[in-house]
Length: 128
Image (cartoon, rainbow, N blue to C red; front, side):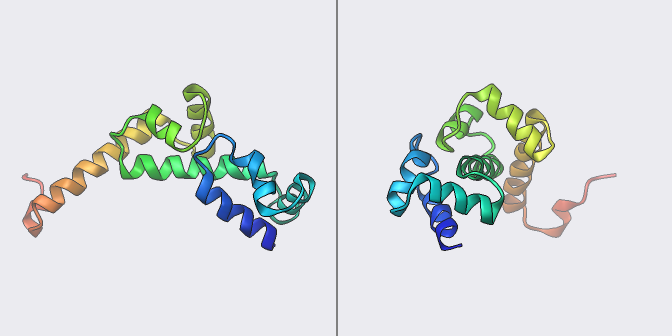
């Protein structure tokens, strides 16, 4: 358990780096085999699968927080690869089409801006 927790902390600090996985075992002072075994026993996945999951979750959060930053940029910042492949993985993982997700996030961001600019309760009521 301490190895996996340390590995997850390492991922959180280095997820955007392309060599994050290859350096993890070395940084933790263990063998690749020990890291692989530990993740398999505790998380039921490889360190590579755990890192991909972490990166996809970071992408989800980044697009939710800043939906107009540009998909390619967000993918790059999260340490993910080719855009088309990432979009497919994202859609499979979260069960929503990327264009619909971005549209929803952008509308939510617009709503938050409107609400900050118009905090009065009557601003929430649509005219009939």
